[in-house]
Image 1 (cartoon, rainbow, N blue to C red):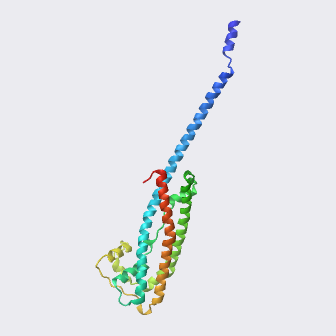
Image 2: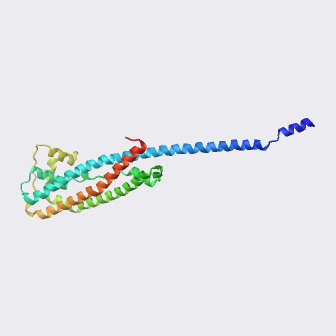
Length: 261
């Protein structure tokens, strides 16, 4: 009887046994939770870095493209100045090489002086909610500001294009010497802007004959070029300047936050 009673007592669990089983189960669940949380954190951090690198490369590429556009825009501004002076005090019956070059820079080159930002990664960040990965408050604020700056810049580009389409192109069609243009770039595979730069730096002379010089209105021409220049300068000093500042700040913050070069 005593042996049977002893065996029965050994199989019975006391509160300490239950406590340790509960503790071990709790620790196992808690450690699993910590591991899952840590894994999720690592995945988010990797995703954050991946998006940051893509965003950085997009901004860096745009920075380079913008500097090229600004350089072309300043060359175009010099052409504006040249033509305004030429129209005010020179004859259009016998046009110089410098005139033909600056005429073409003013009225026939547009795309090389236009900066169109790439915002694919930026739109992905906004539309997918991925911007939340960026914990840095300054980075989030600058990203929002550059989104607005890009929208303003695109609107300004549209305004410029409207002026080109409605005013500049008709003026160019009325007065351009197409024979000169064909001689400048006889090979259609050569981009005309490149051909113009090559011609400008050469000793070659291609005669330019102004179309219908007797019907030419110098006042209208000066005002047309002047308003075009005013529009171009306004874009450079406001929209381009705003974007350039924000782009530089964002690149700096991304470099510091994610140790980029």
